[in-house]
Image 1 (cartoon, helix red, strand yellow):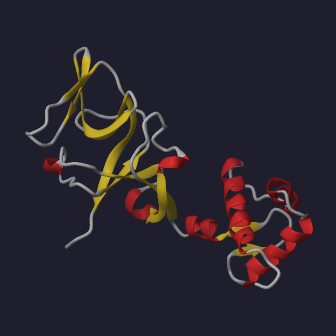
Image 2 (spheres, rainbow, N blue to C red):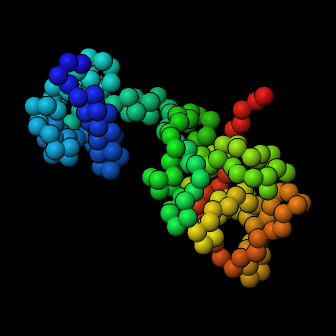
Length: 200
């Protein structure tokens, strides 16, 4: 990698992926990448050539760049962000909350926009959700009665069963030691669809 900046490899790959997502699947041109990253077009070409040699991209000319993420998507995988502690005042999927991304097979979970939320506390043990479990959540703003949801109440996110009643919403805890939360309204961030935990 002599005379080449290792950071540029990741910057270029990330730019291509972000560009593709923002344009509905269209690859950027060399000029787009150069302008977007503030580097020379010849530098972009040199790096893409090396990235192709190393298997990081398939590159066959104008608007035809395929990254590793694109190959994974085509093979039936999607990248899902893992959220850590949700900072107050931030949208639940804000960049600041994302710890990492993991690949999940579309065949198991279906298509849609998902995120993993790391469960905290023991208020949902009756539903099989333990402290530290990864909960796969499908992002949506509506839910059916009794589904387990991620609800935003003010600046706090909570994982509870969704039970709308006459004039208010009951967010039910699956642990008798916890009281239900009663609110007039809340913002739903998604519906829990799967729990993943390490076996000991």
